[in-house]
Image 1 (cartoon, helix red, strand yellow):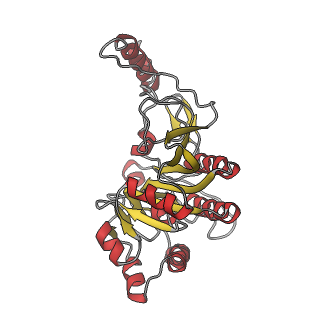
Image 2 (cartoon, one colour):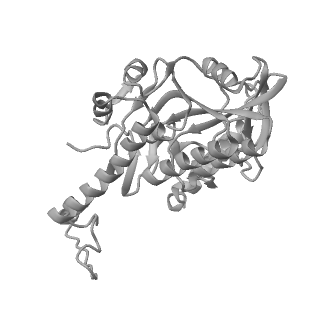
Image 3 (cartoon, one colour):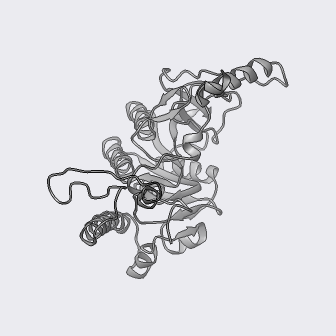
Length: 334
């Protein structure tokens, strides 16, 4: 009987059993069913003086699709960041935004959507946007950082990877081995281009290359518009390699190297605020001992670990066939 139970149900039962046994052990408190319906609310992190700096995290895989976990869906990263921008825009006391970027990138469209929303926010709100790159702000993570008036990186930040990757899984070899074929009826010779069930033709490969080149050119055009780089620096960035902070600074991909408190002070300085101005974040639940390193992840409904609410989609995002501004080691072929 147990063998017939689906892996998902087995997982839920196992987690439920552990949750029942663990409360009271070392004060661990697990929330099996995080509430994703709570609205975002402002949480004061520090400061008492007039004016606010709002910290908005851009964390994980950049997508406009809802994230899925074992018990349902969470808001997409794009939805969550835009919701926080809207709250900041409505608050006249918010005088600067600090984007805390920790992302290897994501889909081309989602990255461009976030870039557009941040630029539109700046135009409407007329305030400064400071970027603090955390461990990784590569490809789409760099793309969404471009609107920053000042871009900071930690000494160990990995950034760059300015380019496009097209992912298209193929199963033709496997199908040949097991004797499976797929019959396709179509109108137009290119209707099924990109199909995983056959090898792409030379013409199709040329079309895909043209699309990738155009998307890559858009990325580089935005870099050249936002960053004061000479042609040799732009050419080096166009290689799509990754850089540590010192290399990125030499190429003018970033403005300064420092830590989160440095970027926060920069935001206050740019906004003309006092050193003890208020610093806020937007999240769904309060958390004890919150500070500037607190992160409001998409869909978070609790400040304590949710045993079922594991961030597996952040660790292993489902990469559908498509175009990505993404640095993902190990995905490339030979």
